[in-house]
Image (cartoon, rainbow, N blue to C red; front, top):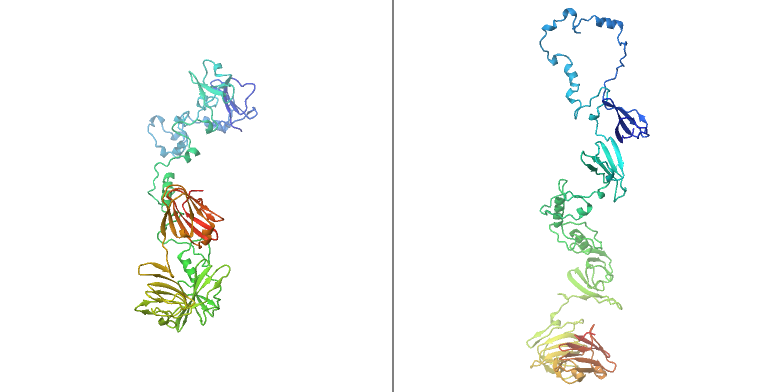
Length: 572
């Protein structure tokens, strides 16, 4: 049966019955109970009360449930006789004044324990009683509504209401003016607050606030402690768990430039790995072993030493393109410029140590190996043919052909090639020329000639060959214009007036100036540098050919008709 929706107490059943309802119809001092189903039809409905009528029959006049023999037997029992003795054995009840313990009567206590105490009838927590019609009195039934009354508005209610009734103010039935329910308290109509349906329609108070997602996200972590970095457990609060987690993170190394302590470990990559994975010490050892570093040299069988290979140490068995006359040995290869240039050193152990070196020049147009050169050792080095020292001078020399180099002041030897440092001596500037006496000199030889020498006289003047080395001199200039000439090369031109001036650089000066020639200019006022007759002057990046007071620039000849202007200029 469906859930009962209404309880009504009425004087008589109405003509039309409401579905799923219980009607209590007044009858004498009690009520008759009628129950309807979902269609409004009266149906049977078991009451929740044990009436104790099972096994009983209706009482009728002149009817009996005993046989004649049973009635005769009962009729022969004397008044006051008991069922546990014959008449002769019955005691005189007037003399029976004692008591008997319950536990001496078999089963009496157990039977009494199964009974309900009379004080539990009709009270809260007890059992309901029945009236003379075997019905539960209405006073022991749950609260009930006697009637529901509808009115257009609250103002239409009667001035004095009745208890047990619900008063409905239909109103407009809208959200702004909804239907409302009231009950009579005995003095006023009190509104019965309906369920809001959802918490969205229920205003929160000032103390017990809704635990919304927005508030959770914006809750301030007041009382957060970072003192403990212990493991988080199920007994931790959210605040203490966050504190532990942050304390644990504080002990971790950052992703950006982490600084580890102790002995951190990482997976060991393969020895030939070539990516950005971490290289631990085990990987470094493996990678070093590939090139014979940190252990035995990597062994190569019949290697071609002209083939490129990673830097490292290799043992070469029957090599190809090894140094002339060299047998098995060790190759130490060093990359100098990402494969474009590298150096090879070859070491042979054959009675004595012999060492050769050579370079690979990775010039794009003509990559090549330079010839092997054996490093001097006791077997091939004769100091007397390479270096001599005398009271009057000292010479240092080296050349590929191992030609003798002498520092004898009176020597007239002509060297195939070399570099000579002299304290003093007679030098020939060219083959067959008259010797010249000079002071300390740095002499460059090639092809049997003194190609160039740098020397110093007693006054401390430097010479490059027979010419003095011109030191940068300072020249002041005035006027509104000035044309730069070859006489200004290597000079420091200082403008000494604040008036504006134009400096002209022409075709003749440019053609006559060697590449690399320089002119330095210091401005005391506005200066404009003007190129003439096809001359090109390239200003600094973002600059111009104009100067203001305090700016210093250098004109440097590049080649042809082109100059670079180097220094600070007025922005373009």
